[in-house]
Each structure stands twice: as C-alpha cells, then as structure tokens.
Picture 1 (cartoon, rainbow over the protein chains, first blue to last red):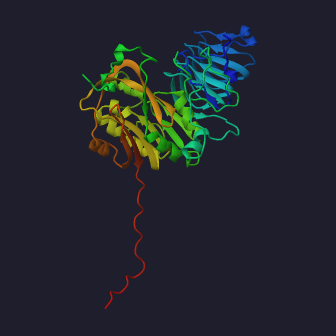
Picture 2: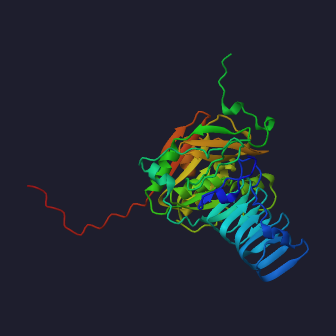
Amino acid sequence: MWDKKEGKDVAPGSFVPATGYGNTPSHSAPSPSTSRLVNIGQTIFIKGELTGTEDLTIEGRVEGKIELKDHNLTIGPNGKIKADVYAKSIVITGELLGNAFASEKVEITNAGILKGDIVSPRIVIADGAQFKGSVDMDKGNSAPRHAQAARGEQVKPMQSVPADSTGQTKNLGSQPAPYLPAEKR
Amino acid sequence: MFKRRTTTDFDPSQAPQTGAAARVEASHVLPRLARRLSLMSHPRVLDMGSVVGGNLQFFIDLGCKVTADDLLKPVEVLRVGAGSAGIDWKNPTTNRLDHSDASFDAIIAWDVFDFLPKAEAKIFARDLHRVVKPGGIVLAYFTSRETERREPHRRYRIQAQDKIEWLPVTNARTLRHVYQNRDIQLMFEGFKIHTAFVLQNGTREMLLEKKVPVAAPALISTPLPAPAK
C-alpha cells in the first residue's frame, strides 16, 4: 500500500513533473549497484574523458566528456561539469554545462542547472530548475497526443494524472504521457 | 459589501511560497496556438518563462521541438543590478537571445515583458522579431492594471489546452509595468496582434504574429491596355 511507485512506471517519452508531487525531487531509488557508488569529491578536478561501468556521483569539477553506459550519473549539489554526458540515468543537482544523453532518464532537481540539450526518453524537470537548451525525446511510434485534439479531432479531454489513495501517481503503463501534477499534497 | 475579488487582492507575501498560492485561469489563446502548431510539421517553440517540465511536455506532445530559455533569471539579475547574466545590457544593439535568426515558429513569452524595464522590453521585442520566423507567433501576457506596482515573478503551468495555473516564483518583487495596447503595438513593431483576450484576473492574453514581408510588386512587363475610345 505504501510502496512508492518508481519512475519505471511511467511511460517512455514522457515528462514527469517533479513539482506537484510535493516539491520533492523524484530521485531514483537506489539500485543494487548503488552500494558500490563511486564519489568524486569536492576538491577533485578532472580534465579529460571519464568512462566507467558503475554508478558515479560527482561533487567536484569535470571538464571533457563523461561516458557511463548503462549506469547512473549523479551530479551533486557542488558538482560542476563542463562536458557532454552519456549515461543510463542522469540526475542533476549541481551544474552541467553540456549536453545530456541518457538512455533512460534525465532529471534536473530544483537546485540543478543545465545549459545544454537533453536527449532522453524521459525527463523530469523540477520547478525552479534552471534549464537552457532544447529537448529531444525519443518517443518511438507514439503519435503526438494533443495534436489530434488541437486539430479538432475526437480525442479524450486532457486530464490530470490520476492519483491513488496514497497520493502517489498510478502506474501509467501505456497511458498517455502525463504533463500535469497529480495532486497537491 | 460585495467587493470584487481579483488577483490584485492577492498578496503573495502572505501566502506560502509554493503550492497553496496557485491559481487557475482559463486561456483563450492557448487553444488557438496549439491548433496552429499542430497543423505544422515539427514546429520549433521557445519557452521563455520559468522552466516548467509539464509545459515543455505539452508542446512536445503537439509535435514541437522545444527549447527552454528562462529569461526571468536575467530579468532578476537586471533587477538586482548584479552581473550581466551573459548579456551586455548596456548596449542596446546586442542580441538578448542567443538564438539564430528566424529559428522559431512560436515563442511563449508569458509575462516576461511586464517585468522588464520599458526600454529593455522594446529591445527584447526587437530581438524576438529577429528569432521568430515570418508568420511565427508570440504568446505574451500583459497586465491591464492601471498602476504599476511591485510583484513577484510568476510561473505558469499549462494544465490543459484551455487552462493555465500560475503561482509566484519567489517573494522577491520586481516592478510590473503596465503597457497599453498602443504601447504593445509600438513595442512589437513588425508584429500584428492576432488575438487578444482579457482574463478575469485582468491579464491580457495576446497572440502576436510576425508579419510576412510582402514581396515587392513585379515590374510591369506587359503594356497597359489601351484606353477604350
């Protein structure tokens, strides 16, 4: 009953508005590999190409390129990255100047700054986040949802994402992508 | 006794900073803009307001390629007078938007212009004219209040094609200027007012369309017909 639904419940090709669900950034739950999380500390400055096959948290500075295929990258509140970033999931709480390419999700928390483009099937942008750039969501074959409605074709009216009794968003499965807060808590 | 309740009665400083102060208004221009964008092939949209993920999603669902560029941040910097936010504010000829010419089919400006100093607003409008394609649309909000006063910046969140929620971003207040329709026409030289509505809260919603340059008339190569005798 109280189990928190995770981001995996949301259909690909969708934003998950971070606010409206209580202003708390919806960080991913720690994966089993999180216990082996590597941290680049505040005083560390790396210039060059950073590659790896495990999750990484950066609190320091990195300039160049970061590539973590199939793994998660977290840019901590003190992290300052000047690089193009490739990862499975990217959480930005610090500052990223560069493009973010994620195979799963890009999340910018309310304290996060991203100046660059996003290429990801799912994006979470908290209200208050600083974002300057364009968004490219690989949505596969899903047709534009509102385009039909806007053209006057018969579609269901747009509604808020329904919430269950726990206040959590329901498993949307293959439902249309949400762009609305479910419910103010 | 029956005092009309308007948004001007609302004092955000007395409300919590987030959530509770949100208000929802009907939008008359957004459905028109959405319809227009939906008829285009992969239109490019620039959202100039405070970043809201759901708004970007709305336009992505219309088939748009969306770019976000939060101009309230530089406006805030301008208000405080610190730094330059990457823009040479003192030089009126420099571009305020670092986007190439005629690169967007629509720009969502929300109420950014109300919070810019009047001279700066005109420079911004000129720069908007540069980055919008001919025939492109600018969605902008202007207050229709009679007097200028300090207000917090607002964040607008699209709830549906005809509903917009707004809430104050911070408690910091910036002077909100009042532009009459004529001021807007002068500011947006090169645009025509496509649609305008006044919302219940006194905000004017406008769609401004960039005029398509009329091709110069072709030189008459055929002789004029002889006048009838």
